Image (cartoon, rainbow, N blue to C red; front, side, top):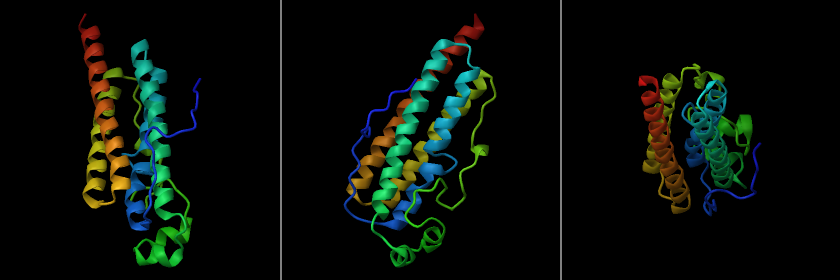
Length: 186
């Protein structure tokens, strides 16, 4: 059972509008290395785990990724709130506006809609955790790319928080992988 607390892990308060920046950040909402893919991957993988610690870590991180999804959606929404078609077109993302207006739609920065093909779940603890380690590094790299393209401190502060959580998740998955590999050797 999950308990939802009605607040973000890190406050998101964006003062400046920027639909182009929103279109880049959208990749962390519904892109291949984004928060939706991560949460679905981890919450799916936990069902095949036989180690209770692995189930707990996958559940914890999977639900945290859902909170990150909410943060990324809030950033994208706040970057576009009040902007109309001409603004989106001026920023070079009019095609997004045509299909979705100001909605937060799960897609990559290139406009590719979210797909379950982004997920991996093999029911092999070592394979799944190795995949999870890579996924966290890819998410971190995407956040690094966003930070290189952004100079708005309201946005960069939230993105830095999310990036740091990817590093923590990588560490937790690494610790768990070490435990499971040691268990296999016994």
